Image 1 (tube, rainbow, N blue to C red):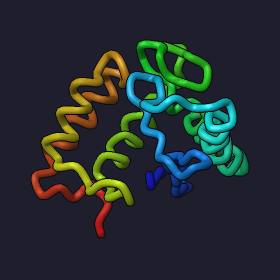
Image 2 (image 1 turned 180 degrees about the horizontal axis):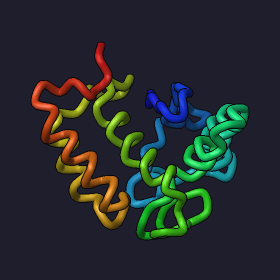
Image 3 (image 1 turned 180 degrees about the vertical axis):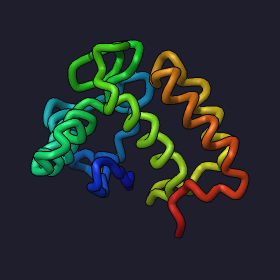
Length: 157
């Protein structure tokens, strides 16, 4: 879950991982699913992106929230989805959400794994700078991690 606060509005954005029809969890690395996916499975993953954006479309005063949700799986190097945008083609809101969503995903306990330690999360974000993550917003997240000595940013149990 990501909490966004702007312009007097608060929005809880739930971004979930996707499951295939046979209940496999799809983990995306380098812009490609780790397991071969069918067209129907890719559609299911894409639907999750569109679902969040459709919810946020209802907040007419903040259209940038839906834009961010729709494009937060794009990558700076162009290997993301759904459109393969790269660099500054990716809306700023999506570049911010991308690093926030990655942090949330790595620090949250999942049915298939425990939360990652803060040091591993920091390493993953640092390794993704300039490829997966915007260097500016990824750098800000690294600063936040470095200041978070008690690991308070993560999802609490």
